[in-house]
Image (cartoon, rainbow, N blue to C red):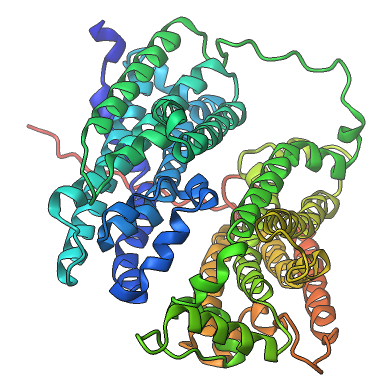
Length: 590
C-alpha cells in the first residue's frame, strides 16, 4: 500500500509550484470579489431599503436561482448578503476545482506527462493523491482568505451581524463545495478516456445538482431533493443566520468517499484509458473533417451548445424578475443610478411623507414621459452586461486555434493541404457567429421568462428584446478581431485580451453606470461607442456606429490572418530561441 503512494509529498510540492500563479489568481479574484462587495452592497442597501429586496428574494423565481429566502426571517445584512452571494460564489468555487483537477490529472495524462512521472519512483496512486492534496490546499486558502476577509470587513461596518463564526462558516462552505466537485472530477477522470469528456461530465453533474436543488428550495415538501444535492446542502449552513456546521461534515465525508472510489478505479485502469471504454471512431472521417471550417466546428460544437444553453438560462433568470421591478427599483438607489442615471431621471428618497407606493407611481410617471417602460430600461442595462460577458465564448473560440498550436496538434493539420489563414479564419468565423447566437439566446431567454412573469408582452415586446441584444454584436466583433490580431501578431501575448475584457467591464459598468470614469476612458473600448437603447422620443438610431465597428473588426481580423500566414508555427517558442537553463555549481569535496 505504501508503494502506491510513494513520493506523494514531493509530487504535491511540484503541483503546488505549477499552480502557484493560476490558483492564487483564482483565490484572489473570487475571494476578493466576495470580500470587497461586502461594503459596496452594505452602503447600496441601507437599513430602511432592504425590505423590498427581501420580498423579491422570497419570490419562487428568485428562490429557484439563489436559494431559500432565509433573510426574511433574520433581518441582518449578513443574512441578506448570504442570500445574494452564497450559491453563485459556491458555483464559481466548483468551477475552479473542476478546472484544477482536470489540469493535474487527465490533461497531464493526455499530454504524456503522467507517463514520464510513472517512469520515476512514484506510486501508482501518487499522481491522483497529489492532485487532491493540491486541491485541498487551494480550497483551504480560499476558505481562510474569504472567511477572514469577510469578518474584517463585516466588523468594520455598523450592525451587519457578520460574526466570526458565520464568516469562517462562509469560507468553509466555499472550500468544502470545491472539494466535493474536485472529488467528482477525479472520479470522472477515471471513468472517461479524455479530459474533454471528463470535464463535460463534471459540468453536467454541476448543472444537474444546481437544478435539482431548485424544487427542494421552493417547496418544503420536496426539501429532500435539496439535501441530496451539494448545491442545496451548502445553503443549509445558513451562515450569519443559524450557523449550522453539520452540512460541512456531510460534504467532507462525501468528498472523501468519492476520492476513495477514484483511487480504486485508478488502481485497476490502464494509462490513457478509462473505465468506460471510448466509443470507437468512424472508419472514415465525416464530411466536417474535409474542410478547415468543418474541422474547427467539430472541435467546438460541444462548447457551442453549452454556451448557448448557459446564456439562455442566464437571460431567463433575469427575465423572471421583470414582473416585480417597480418596487425593486423605487427602493434601491444603486439600481436607480444604473438604470435611470443615463436618462437623468431622479426619484425623491422614500420617507414617511413619501412612502414606497408613492415612489412607485412617481417612477412609472417619470419613465412614461420618455416613452419607456421599466422592463425595457432594465433589459437594456442587463444586455449591456450580457454583451460584455459574450466576449468570453467568442474569444475562447479564437484562442482555441492558439491552444491547438501550443499542444502541437495544429502542426499535423497544417502539414496537409490546409492554408494557415484558412485554418485560423475558420475559428474566427465560428467566433463571429457565436457572438450573434449567444446574444440571441440570452435575449430570447429573457423575453420568454419575462413575458411569463409579467403575463403580458406589451411593456417588453420580442422585437425590442432582440434589438437590444443584437445592439452589442458589432462591439463583440471588434473584441474578436483583437483576439485574432494577437494570435497572428503576438501569440505570446494572447492573455492581454482578458486584461482588455476586464478594463471594458470596469470602465463601462462604473463609467457609464455611475459616471466615475471620464468619457475618453469609455472610448478606449468599442462598447463606449454603442448607442444606448431604448431611444428617446424623436431620436433615431445611428447606423454609422455599428457599420464602423464592423469595418474595424474586419480590418483587425484581416491583419491578424495576414500575420498568422507569415509567422512560424512553433508550439514551443515563437522566436526559435531557448534560454539556457541555469546550472548550479557544485563544489567538489576534497
